[in-house]
View 1: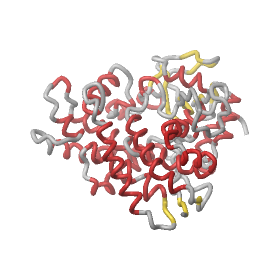
View 2 (view 1 turned 90 degrees about the horizontal axis):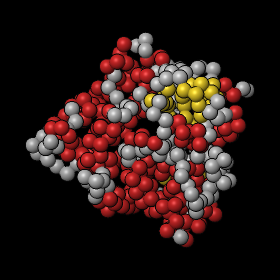
View 3 (view 1 turned 45 degrees about the vertical axis):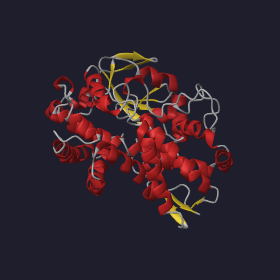
View 4 (view 1 turned 90 degrees about the vertical axis):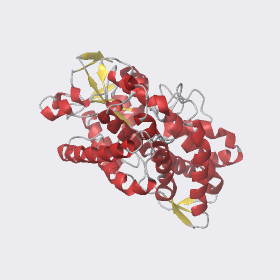
Amino acid sequence: MTADTLLERITDYANRPDPWPLYAELREAGPVVPQRDGSYLVGTYHEIVALLHNPRISVDPRNLDAAASDPSQETRRLPFLRLDDPEHHRLRTLTMRPFGPPHSPGRIDAMRGEIARITEELTESVRDREQVDIVDDFAYPLPVTVICRLLGVPHEDEPTFRAWTDVLVAAADIGTGEDIAQRQKAAVQAQQEMGGYLLNLAQQRVGRPTDDLLSAFVNEPDPALRLTSEELAETAILLLIAGHETTVNLITNGVLTLLRHPDQLERLRSDPDLLPRAVEELLRYEPPVHMRERIPLADVDFAGTTLPKGARVIVALASGSRDPKRFHEPDRFDPTRPDNEHLGFCSGVHICFGAPLARIEAQTALGALIPRLGTASLVQDPPPYRTNAMLRGPRHLPVAF
């Protein structure tokens, strides 16, 4: 096989359990590898970082050549994650005000006790069971419950917004072209329904503030700092989805990795203080997000290749985090790894908004599970994976005790 089929092979579900040899092939062929479908793949660490920090490279899908012939793209509503500066900076700043420093420095840190309590409830609920699905019984319920409480979304509505989430995440996946139009059509409908649902919840809090993000958004006293209805809908959708989807993978991949490395598991059981560094290593070694899309705003000469204006450029973050030119023995899981500036939360101005929350959740969840994992074993290895290539993680992870 040739290098111009790498994107097709990386996104092929058959390679979901072990994409790492393909990423090694990508780095060997790189740093920039043109694909048969007209896209470009970048998989080396330093080039990925340079691309993510380049102001001539856009995140807005409306800048794709393929979007130019679709009039609906002009009015497409996008969250700030898919917008360029200065609009990205404006919306991200307004969203950050009730979420974190400097205006709300204690909100996320104050969630530690609540996260620990939810974690304890989940571990107690499965304590006497001989087999547990880490995804359904633990890794999914924890971040969903946390983001529901943080936003102010009733947890009993979880089945409803889970269906919308599945559609929207599928539409955002990195693929080679199959059924994209159908997925986008379904995503538009899910976006409208989910946005309407969240706006309705927010409007119920106007003049009746509660201690959650939706309430903080709609009760902002300064009109200049208030999100419009459309901005609020898109921001709430983003926070709700991003607030749990990636963390599910981080926790699940963490358990899978530790059970595959019993020596490191025992090391963490005997020295829990290593856990924060272990989570950083998991973000490098088995990251929850594998790829992101970028679009040149003009023809850009980059690493010996001209990236054409409007072309689809895929940055393989997971490949970059295992680049031997940046990390010593990158295919070795080392919870004590120094200088671990991984790409697990991306890089540049679009670095993950919820990274502090994800770190707390992962540290708390794994800290509760590790004492029990010494007697645990994988029921199936490799486990069944989610179809999504961008958000890679097991769909189920059955573990026997």
